[in-house]
Image (cartoon, rainbow, N blue to C red):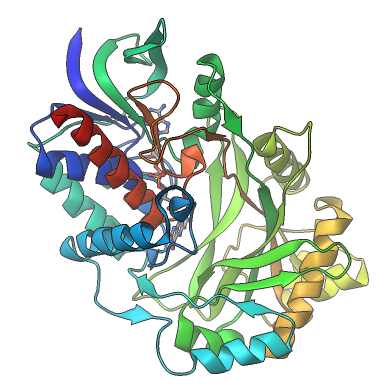
Length: 446
Ligand SMILES: Cc1cc2nc3c(=O)[nH]c(=O)nc-3n(C[C@H](O)[C@H](O)[C@H](O)COP(=O)(O)OP(=O)(O)OC[C@H]3O[C@@H](n4cnc5c(N)ncnc54)[C@H](O)[C@@H]3O)c2cc1C
C-alpha cells in the first residue's frame, strides 16, 4: 500500500494552493489526486487539473466580502491578509497587474445605484481572462512537478476512517492509499460525493442556501457605464414581492455564455459565462441569482437546484433562452423571435423557449423586478431584447462542521473549497488551501 503524509483530493485552486504551500514550506510527502484529465488534455469545463478555475473567466475578487466564508472562520483582518498572500502567488505565476473597481467613479455609481433601489458592493478585481487562466494554472502545475506527486484521471472513491481514526483514501480502481492527513477539495463537481462521504462518516453538516436564477445577456454598451469602472458590478436587490435577496454574479464584459455540465454522477446542464482577455464579443453577460435559505426540514439544496436545472434540460435538451420581452408578454421565444431580436445569443445552441415553465413564480418576479431596477442605473438592461438563459444554479454544497483551520470532526481530515461550501470563487478557494496546509504543517511540527 502506498503511504503519504498528505493526500489532497481535487486539483482545483483549493487543492493546488494547498499543495503549493505544503511543497514550499515542508518536507511532507504529498499526493494530489485529480479525477479529470491533465490541464492540456481537458475537455470538461469543471473537472480536470486546474479545476473549474482553469477555463473560468479568471476574475480574482480581492476581498473577503465576496466569494466565500473565509472571514467567518478567520476574522476579517486575517482573511484579508491571506487574500493578499494568495493574490501575490497568482501574480507570481503570471496574473496581470491591473486592478479594477478602485478608481474614480465608484462612489458615483454607488450613489446612482442607491437611487435605483440597488446596493453596489464595490470590490477590487484582478482580471485574467479565460485564456490566461489556464496558463497561470499550468505554471503552478509545472512548479509542483517534482515537489508533489500528481495523479490525474484518478478519483478518490472513499475516505477511510477506522474507529474514528483517519487512515487514508480508497481510489476508484480499489487501490488503498495510506495517509496521515486528507484534504478534500473536490469542488462543485464533487460536492455530492463529499456530502455522501460526510454523511457516511457521521459529520455534522450545515445547509447552505441555494441560488437559482438566469444568465442575462445584453449589448456591451448597455453596461459599459459600470464595467469600464468596476469590471464586475456586484449589485444587490431585495425583491418587493417576496423580500428575497437577489444579486448579480460573475459579470463577463465582452464575454460569451457557456454551457456547463455539473453534478458528478447525476449531472445536469446549466449555464455560466466567460470573457476572453483578447477576443471581444459584442455582448456582456452576468448571472442574476435569487438566494433562498430554506427552513427545516429542508436539507437538500443541491437536489433542489438540480431539480430546477433538470426542468430546463427536459424542456430544451440543455439550456433555454428567452427574450425578456417575450417572458413579460407570457409567450415563448421562438427561433424566429430570437433571430429578429437585437441581441445575438453567444450561446447559439441554447433552445428558444419559455422560462416560466422552469422557474418558480417567486424567482421570476424577483428577477424581473431587479432587471427593472438595473434599467434605471444602466438604461437598456430591461429592454425587450435582453436575453435570459436558464438556468444558472449555484450549488453551495453542504458545509461540514469545521475548525478555523478547516479540519472536520474527524481529526486529520480537512474539507475546503467550493465542494465544502466554504468558497465560491478562485481567490477564497485558493486561500482555503493555504489555511489547511498551514494547519497541517503546524500539527506536524508540534
Ligand atoms: C465557467 C466558470 C467561470 C468561473 N468564473 C470565475 C471567475 O471569474 N472568478 C472566480 O473567482 N471564480 C470563477 N468561477 C468559480 C471558480 O472556478 C471556483 O470557485 C473555483 O475553481 C473553486 O475551486 P475548488 O478548488 O474548490 O474546486 P474546483 O475548481 O471545482 O476543483 C475541484 C476538482 O476536484 C476534482 N474532483 C472532484 N471529485 C473528485 C474525486 N472524488 N477525486 C479526485 N478529484 C475529484 C474535480 O474534477 C475538479 O477538478 C467560475 C467557474 C466556472 C465553472
